[in-house]
Length: 336
Image (cartoon, rainbow, N blue to C red; front, side, top):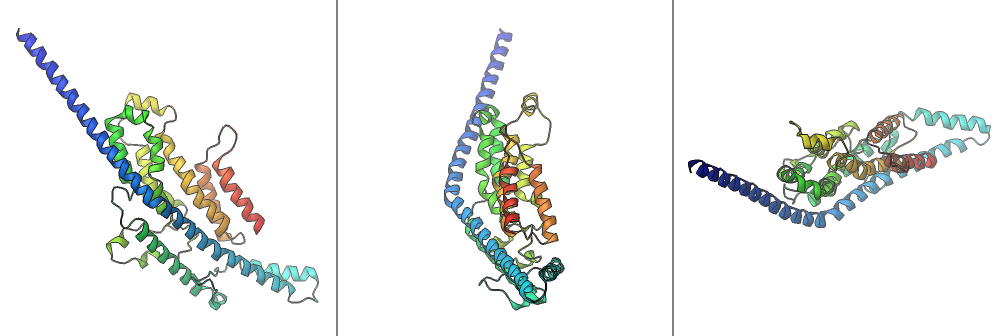
C-alpha cells in the first residue's frame, strides 16, 4: 500500500510538472501573439516611411554626384576645345593630363540649394562641409520621424530577436513548424534598413559626424555613422542577427542534426543582407562611385568583396551578386 501511494504521488507530481510546463508554453505563445500584433502595427506605421527616407537619401546623393560628374565632363570638354588650332592628339593629351592630375584632388559637392561653391577650386572644403552638414541634418530628421517615438521593443534587431528567442526556447517544435525563423527576416526589416541610413562608406557625411550630436536623449539613441565598408558588420543589426542564428552554449542532438542541413535560422543573415544591404551597395555603385577616382575604386573593391562573401548561386545559375551588383557596375561604367 505504501508503495502504491508513493507511485501515485510521483504520477501526480509528473502530471503537475507537465501541466506547469504546458501553461508556461501557453503563456509564451500568448505573449508572442500579442507582440506580433503590435509588431504588425509598427510595420504598418513605419515601413513606408523608412522606404521614403532611403529613397530620399538616395536621390540626394545621386543628384549631388551626378551634378559633379556633369561639371567634371564640362571642364574636360572646355580644356579640349580651348586651343582649337592645336592638333587633336595634343588637345586629347592635355585634357587627359589634367584629368589624371585631378584624380587625387578632393571632390567638390553640392550644397542643399543645389549650387556649387567657388571654393571647389581651392579644395572644395566649404562645399564638402555644406553637404556633410545637410546630410547630418537629414539623418537627424529621419531618426526623429522613424524611431524617436518607437518602443524599445521594436527599435532594435536585438529586441525583436529576444521575443523570437523566447518561442524558440520554450516551443522548439512549434517554432520550426510555424517557420518563425523565416518570419524573422521580415520582422527586422525596418530597424535594419533604418540603421543602414547611417552606413556611409564613401563618407559623404564628412568625418566629424559624431561631433554634431547633441545632449538630447533622442539624439543620443541615434546610430553612429559608419564610414567604412567593414564596419557595417559591427552595426547592431548584423551583430544581433549573427548572435541569434549562432547561439552560444552546448548543442543538443536535435540541434546538431538540424545544423547538418540548411535551416530557416541559418538563412536569416544572408537573406537580410541580400534584401537590405545589397540594395544600399547597388545605390553606392550606381550613383555615388566616381570611376575616375582611385580612392573610390578601392572602396568599390571592398564593397564587391563584401557582396561576394554573402552571395548565393541558385540552381538556375543566377545570384544576387550577379543580378544586382554586377548589373549596377556595368551600368555605371557605361555611363562614365
